[in-house]
Amino acid sequence: MPVLSENLLFFILAGLTIFSGLMVILQTNPIFCALALAMTMISIAGIIASLGAWFVAGVQLIVYAGAVMVLFVMVLMLFDLKDEVRAFSRGLVSGFVKIASVGIIGGVVTAAIWMSAETVFPTTPSGLQVSATQSTKQLADLLFKKYIFSFEAMGALLLIIAIGAVALSRIQGGTHADR
Image (cartoon, rainbow, N blue to C red; front, side, top):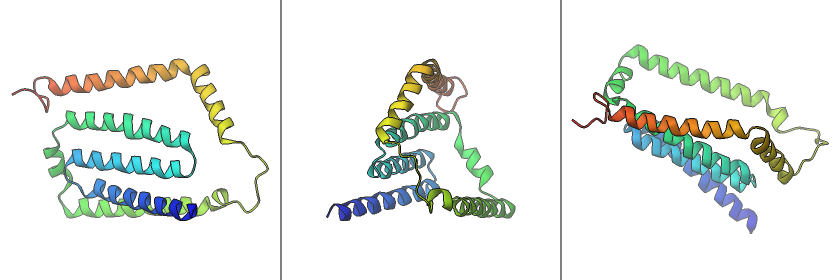
């Protein structure tokens, strides 16, 4: 019975990931697009957690669904997106370039998956087996002992960027200025 519930959970999360990923592409409102992207990242973290990689799922939530999405919304606040939508949504050549880009990227991703199949699904078992607890402990020791200054500096830098984005969007001529 646990295998059935794990499979059901996977298919629910996979469906949610695909649906919210499509919403990222199909939404015209940039804020709804950002919310759909956050939902995509959260459901990917759920899939990772269902595989037993709790640390990676936590990093996925904290870094991508948290910090990156906050920065993405801050950038959206800085720009008047009405002009950008009109500039990127016209013309036959523009449509051809978009479709060709999707085809090229899809081909590159397919080729990368095909060429890495031996790495992902090895035919011979690996002799090195490291426990997840031990590798997480080694990563934490490295991050919080050797690179602690860089870690804290990055946090301060992200905070300064967020404050600066809000301040710039509020000044005269900004997209959210008091008029």
